[in-house]
Structures are given as structure tokens and as C-alpha cells.
Image 1: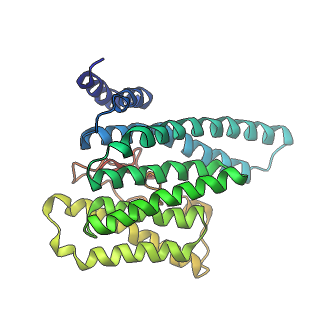
Image 2: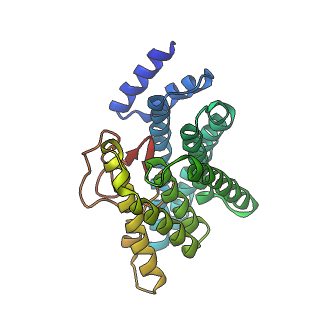
Length: 286
């Protein structure tokens, strides 16, 4: 099948919400070996985010049920077995994406923006693996995620303005990695606050095209900071409230109070208010 036909089929699959088909099309496009356009890498990102996102959400829900359920040993075993089934599906998805990133995408990235995008994506998918991994495997996965995020972060500081949406999204996801995976709220808050403050200082330089995207991500950074600092101050936060924070194809994001439709780069989503993730420059906010 020709590349143009695969792209058309991927777009059709997205409209039909058949994300496995969408991912399969974009996998073939990627394996053809040429550098992807912004539209193409956004399609790839959206496809696999939705394929993996359903499993991640299901795993969280089942884990929550297991913790809260006061039931018989037989029923608990049923919950455990089902969680393990869902858990076993995620590594295959993540491994596929990571192989595409290492073999084709990062190697073929000819500009800093694309390289940062792909390295952030690499950090995200190793982070997803870390959510369900254990033992030595988890430690190595965490190291891989942190390494990819850090490399992307270092490049972004040299090549992008503090208000660039991709740089802000990277800071958002990286800070969530520190908070959720490394259990280090101090570093998470420092990273998020620094990114927010630097963007605020240059907000008047934003052009109209990226203003709404950048300010939305800044809102998410600020909301996370509010939650994290109140947590560290010892304020009680029940499980339902904690579940309101989520990751952007990796990082924790708070749901919007209302759908955000004003930018063509954003797909209305929110957790749990909307059904799809906020999507900024191909980066999903969940």
C-alpha cells in the first residue's frame, strides 16, 4: 500500500476510533524509513497513545478496585488475574513504539523539534512500562525513561523558547515522572515551577498561533503545582481527587473544568470529564 493511502486510512481509522488500525497503518509508514512530517508523527503519536491509553486506564481502575474491594478470596483472585491480563498487554505496545523510535524516528530526525518530540515520546513509553514493571526491570526502565527525558530537556533549553508548546509539554511530563515514578515531589515542583516562571516571563513574545497551546499547558503546570504543594503540606486528598491528575502521554495533568476547543492542535479530552486526551503538537495530555 502506498504511503498516501496508508495516511488516508489512518485518518479514517482515527475518525472511526479504530486506533489499532490507525496504529498499524502508521507503523508501516514509519517502517518505510523516511522522515515523518509533523502531521505524520502526530498521527503516529495519537494512534499509539489511544491504543496504550485504554490499557493503562483499565489497569488503574482494576488496581483501584482490588485495593478497595472487601470480598472473598475467590473474587480477589479473579480481579488479580484480570489485572495481570491487562498488564501483560501494555509491554508489547510500548516495546513496539520504542523500537520504532530507536530504529527509525530518532535516527532520522533532522531538526531539533522532531528530535525533542521523539525523545519525549521515548521517555513517556518507558514511563508507561515503569508503571507496571517491578524489580530490576523497573529500575532499568526508570533509568531509560529519565535518560530520554533528560536528553530531550537539555536540547529543548538550547533550541526552544521557554514558551514553545513542546518544551512546556516536555517539562510537564518530566515533572510528572519525578512525582509519580520517582516519588520526588520536590524535584517535580522545582521543574514545573521553573518552566512555568520562565514561560510567564516571555509570555508577551508569543505569537497568536501558539498562544492558546502554550497557555493551556502552563495552566496544567500551575494546577499540578497547586496539587503537589498542598499534598506536601499535609493536606488530605482522597483517592478520587488524586485520580484527577493524569499524565500527558506521560505526565500528570489535571482535567480541564470545561472542554477546550479553541485551537486546531487540541483534541478535546480530559479525565474524567471528556473522553479523549488533550493533544498538543502530537503530544497527548494523559
